[in-house]
Length: 125
Image 1 (spheres, one colour):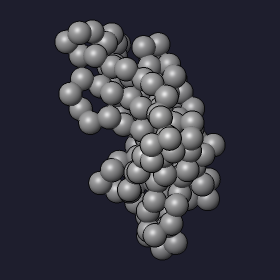
Image 2: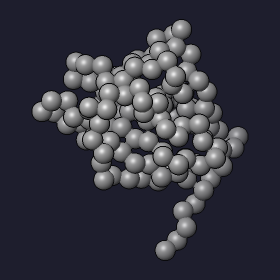
Image 3: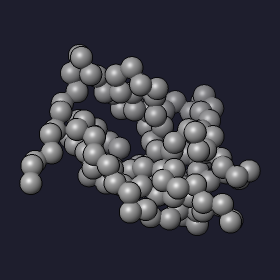
Image 4: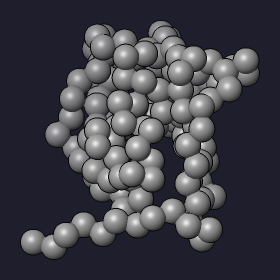
C-alpha cells in the first residue's frame, strides 16, 4: 500500500480560506436546505470559489451519508452525503473533509455543495 501524497499550497497552487462576508443559502427541490452566516470561502488556485457551511447549518433531515470517498492531496480525504428531498435523491451532492490537512484545517466540520446539483447563493452583508 502506498502513502497518499500531501501537497502544501504554494504560489503555483494557492489556497485561501476566509470567512464569507454575508449569508449563504442553499436551495434544492424548491426548499432551503442550508442557511448560514458562518460560512467559509475556500479559493483554490484558479478554480471557482467554494462555500463551506458549518454542518450544523444544514437541515439534517435531508442528509444521507454516502459510501463515496475521494482524496485531494491539498485538502485530504473527503466523504460525501446525498440529499433526500421527498422522493428525489441527489446522489453525492455534498462533500466534507472531516480531518483536513493543516493548510485548510478551518474547513473541518463544514460541508460544501456541488453547484450543478443545488443552488448556492451568497447575499452580501
